[in-house]
Image (cartoon, rainbow, N blue to C red; front, side, top):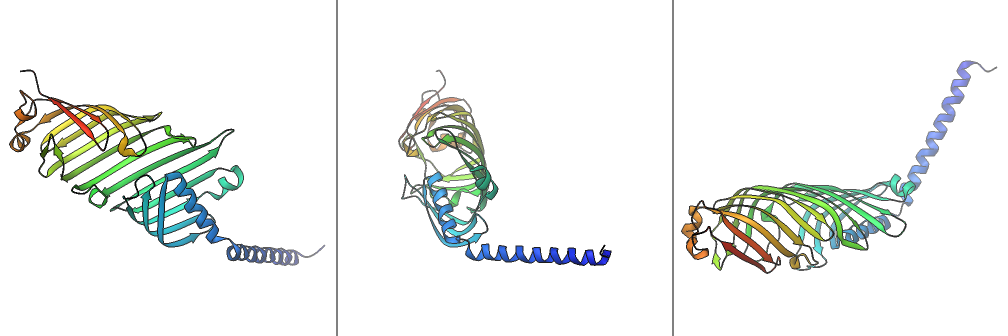
Length: 298
């Protein structure tokens, strides 16, 4: 029987040899790993899921299935004239989920627009189709850094939370929810009833929507503004592109004296006066909305 010190020596020798082998194997994997192919695959997956085109100025591979993009330009496929600039974006796919479950599972984090957006995306193949789930949360996003239509300018910060689940054969027929809120917002370039509105302040705005089978139900909307307070509910029939989404909203508008000084309320509706609620109906589409405003009974 060998002495104890010789057994320990053999044990440490075998352990060191095994560790050396593992290190060499890892170095071999890192050196021969197809980084570019993985990066292109991640880019394809993200573009395909978000229906966008992405241009990246600088990219860094993160082993085993991750990437870091810097100075990113995101262009919606259905609106190529609109571009979103992102400072940095990290995408990390779960290697165990991909290897053992054959399930796509990724985490992503965007830095830009003065704040950050983080979330997750998962795709799981069923018997007939692949189902997708995305959950996203945005914090301290600056409105002035978004690409608004020409002539419109907005400042202030917003935050949101959303989750959406859909079948890849019918992406617009999924279900989910959206929460949003903002504060200290200034708006320029809007008009109402043919009248150009002055710079408008919104001290706070918040809302909650449920999304199901191609429609969005707005079950809460509240806005406190310098010209008026607005609250109400309604529905949106979602279309692609989003500008063709059909509106059917019913609101209560409480005008303030500041609005009466800009637009005489009597021009908008008979009997309208500051502090008295008015019925505001919004129909049409996002790109061509139609307003109807009714004052209190005479």
